[in-house]
Amino acid sequence: MEANVNKRQFLGRTLTGVSALALAGCDRLNMSPWFSKVLAVGESINKGVHQLAGGRVSMAQEFSEADLSPVFRGNGSINPDDGAYRAMAAENFANWTLKVDGLVEQPTVFTLAQLRLMPRRTQITRHDCVEGWSAIGKWTGVPLAQVLALAKPTAQARYVVLHCADTYGTGGSKTPYYESIDLEDAYHAQTIVAYGLNGKPLPVANGAPLRLRVERQLGYKHAKFLARIELVESFAHLGRGKGGYWEDRGYQWYAGI
Amino acid sequence: MSQAASVNAHAAAPTSYLYYRHTLPVRIMHWTNVISLTILLMSGLMIFNAHPSLDWGKSSYTGRQPLLQITSREAPNGQLVGITRVLGHEFKTTGLLGASTNAEGKASDVAFPHWMTIPGFYSLADARAWHFFFAWLFVINGVVYVLYALKSRHFQRDLLPTRTDWRSIGHSIIDHIKFKHPQGEDAKRYNVLQKLAYIAVIFVLLPGIILAGWAMSPWLNSIFPGWVDFLGGRQSARTLHFIFAWTLVAFVLIHVFEVIISGLWNHLRSMITGNYRIKGTAHGGQRE
Image: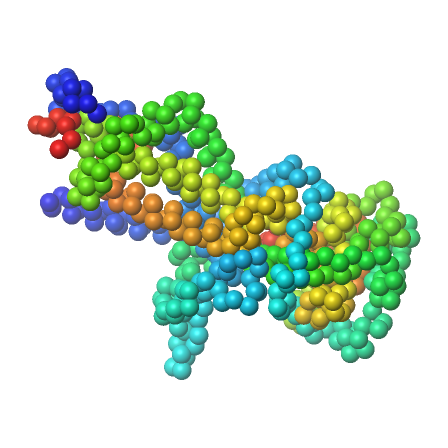
């Protein structure tokens, strides 16, 4: 009996000790660069398997009007406090433009009126945030393929970088939001530069006046307050080189899961 | 086991000897599961902390109340109170859910406390990296296990209940309630409840966790929309993933409990070295 109690005490203490060590060990591993690279293998397998399973042309599920979320949640920057953006918002974005440049034959500047006259697409899709929530909205906009057709990317162009008018952080550390997608996603039928949500102009909380919709990826890829589209061969020179504001802070570039 | 066989076994058996119970591949895959499922649970709880509520349906904003919500509020005295709402019922869960003390000893309004999550501080980005890496380790391990179990006949020989097993199910239930465990030669085989539990976990629960997890991927949803709808929509899939994960935790608690009361060191040795000690008793291998 005595021996059993001692055994049990020993086991209990060992378990507590080992768990504490393991937890501290996990946190230390978490901070080490080599281990981050090991963990990133998971992202590569996700991307590879998803592309193998469905190629690049699968269409995101579309829903009916009955499925629309009563209020479409805004997240991240929901009211940019940047002076230039505020001034544009005050005049109802009358002078907002979308610049397309970088590796293109025909750098082009689009006004909102011009974008609204171009072929449009309306789709009811589900927006999945990386945090875990989803909301269903009806988006109207110009297929990004139409915009690119006018600017004519050169043969070297491999990625589309979305530059946004909102910034994160305060004071001297203000960092503009940006994102990037590859050309297959850029030319996908459901990838649009949206100016309408649920039949109305895009609200500020959801990225007025323009935002990207790249439906098979998580919310942070859907850049809001879109002001400039840059075609690049590599995004290594942008931000911290990972291809997006959140990617520079540890999130996966491939956001299909 | 037939009466004759057990009597013969008893006659031939020395009083105590080591029996090779678990093959090396099974032992390696068992411990790979222990590590990957522990990390998956803990990184999963961190991911849950980014949006600590569960809904049913296609989206989170349907006008209906969440099924589960973990939140916090500040009491008049300035103290943080943890609140857990389940199906409309509200519970104060300060210290564990909604409000707990973080690693630095400060009050924190996270849903699951730091000691249950990986990493032990708030980081959705890092938790996702852990989760995906160990999810693939777990999936690959699981596929190899199923192939091995069929090829080596481990499944047919050790896990599939025999006709005798089915007949003894009432007996087995009573034995479990009385915490009575097979002794001697009978201890070499899994009992019928044990077999059924393992089969349910291996072929229903674990695949269910994986399928509900994959149903949360918008990209996979674009390839196989029907299966997300079958689960009730993306938010239902998220809820099921959470429920299945905790069902697995319940299985592990029962599994570890049974291991402890039926001979912890003997079981641990057999899952490490493969050898399980069979003790001959006055009653030999006979089931009482």
